[in-house]
Image (cartoon, rainbow, N blue to C red; front, side):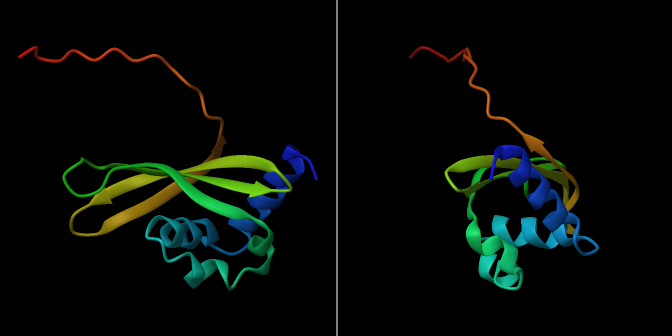
Length: 112
């Protein structure tokens, strides 16, 4: 299996049932992966990790999680993005494949 085949398989899994990616992403983000992934045998062959996330209480309404899905030594990354509101919690609105990119960042810190 190659990367494109992994992406195709994952896309089909995320869209398999209505809002399946919503359930999967919530379960993974909250580390309750057995809740959903145990019910989807196609995920058994993937090693799944949350590699980045942003948002939640006190961080504004932008909310996302990035997961790596590794199978047969090949890793595919998917980002689930949405909104967070204190009265409703997190709600994912879409997902898409991403590629990790390293960048140099400059910080401006107070010198004491």
